[in-house]
Length: 143
Image (cartoon, rainbow, N blue to C red; front, side):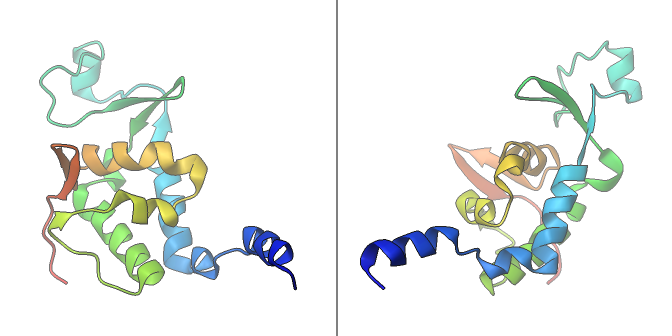
């Protein structure tokens, strides 16, 4: 096999880790984490959608599509649990429960069309906080 054939073959080779159940489950979770339309919680309805003073964002704009976070299934602990399973499955290492979250590593196992939802979910759930351009994990959970 010459170098060109080898390089072309590599382009079409799918990383088998992407088909592992925890990775697939995380992608499904990420896709289901948001519902269509603006948030309709009591606070958002009462304020006509003005989120001034909210600790975490409720309504998001994903490339012209309005969506709201499903609070019942996207608490920081829920997101952490799903992320820990996918991270371990994909990297074969435990997710550090403090310090910097390497978003590039997470994006390796998240479907490209879901990348736009990843950071909003991580921040809005309270799992991470962006400090000087670095994502710091905020949640502590027993191993």
